Length: 458
Image (cartoon, rainbow, N blue to C red; front, side):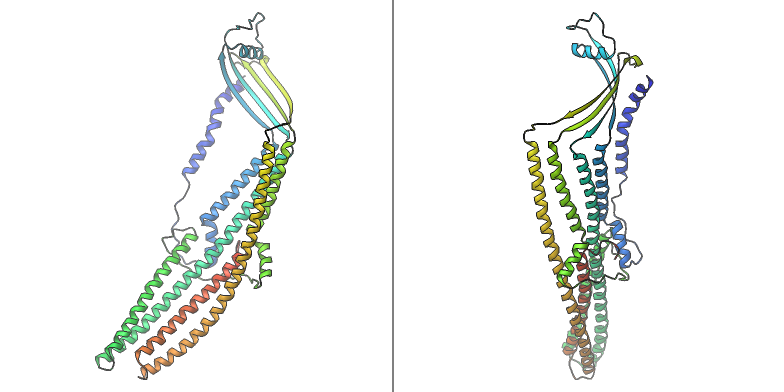
């Protein structure tokens, strides 16, 4: 029959071609980070880019695809399995001679069973089997795989929540560094103007050399602060680029902070209730505990028998002609029950119970960790808001004091040391206010993460 000869030709190609395609796909994988975009990006745009290009998010999406493949694989037990086998045999073993010759329908009548002679045979087989019953284990494995898919989806959500908080906080670090740099540049300009005036006065004999040197020292200090601010800005901007999936050696340009965080409770029990509702890792843990309970059930069902339907259709022919009068077939229904397995089933169930107990302990630990994160987030937000209010008041007072001292200094009522101290106090107050403001926004973002509110679009 020609169909068997065609199968002889196609079988090797069918077996090796998927491996060739997979190797080609892997060789084309892109692992080099992309350059930083040149345009200014708002906070919302950065969050969108981070969820698309961050390697952690790509890994989480790959886990979803893997879990989906495992789900389909687990469901394959409900389907029949078909295959083909092709074999060429030659030998002089009496048992093989008899079985193969009988299947060829060519057993001689005067055969010597002790020394039948040599034989050769070409065999082509179509076979199939189907598991009719396995104690329900296949159904349980499919349910567990479906739970794995849900866990993988929640894993992506959990990573998105953490990544969102990291992007928001790093964005505010960049904005704070920009403002620190601006304060330093303004201070340099102010001190430089005063230094020019004092140099003129010094040449005219109106001020002492020590006053001029004190102002030059102050100028050196603010220039040093500018260098530190530039370095902080470069490092924060580079970190932000890395979070978005771009080359971290290059700084990204942040634009508007156009993200409005949702209103969040300021009391522990209400905040914890919100976290229990929104935290993806808590939802995943709940599903994981259900999956471990299913695993215990599956181990218990190993005691039940299995029923399998199987069949074969084959040709044995010494000349590989596969004539129709040499065809064979058989169908069987097999029931098996493993009575003793060396206590393997008992050990398997005990192991499943131990894994379930471990998962329950991990769940309790996660609840404690979440509660701690919520409490820390609430405390950080409360403290940051208080510091920001105090810092705003300090800037107003320091600014008023600097104006008074400047007028007194220009009128000769105070010396340069008093003026420099007032200018230093004012700039430090501005720096503290800026730091307090962005600490407050970062603390709110961290609290939103602890509550699980940053997984999607906020």
